[in-house]
Image (cartoon, rainbow, N blue to C red; front, top):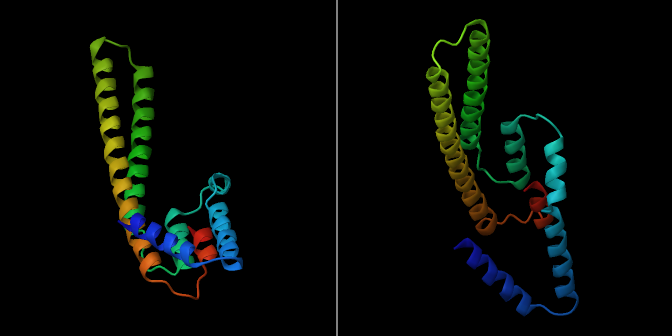
Length: 162
């Protein structure tokens, strides 16, 4: 719905402009396109382990959008903690198995299958939760950006923050 509404607005603006105004708008749209390039996102990934919540809050502040990423941060933290504790448990089990002799051939295989199934199920649940939180936040942000324009923030500034 928002995509169709945006496309209609852009087409109507293009149709109403000509000459220098049209060229200026095209230049601005090109700058927006560059702001969303993949190279920039790749560089941001290399920066390291910045706190996710602080970074997201700062980006929303730059956009002048009141949405806050608590649900997204909570979902990310839950997934991170589950992975961390699972890895610790696997290391502990691995150390215990090194000290013991294997008496039953089926028992470790059964444990591994259950672990793999648990990991797979948790990964799907976590991905679904992160996706749902991200889409909810994206929808709120897009609605505010499209319908709640504040002229003090330029489109280029918003695109860089996004």
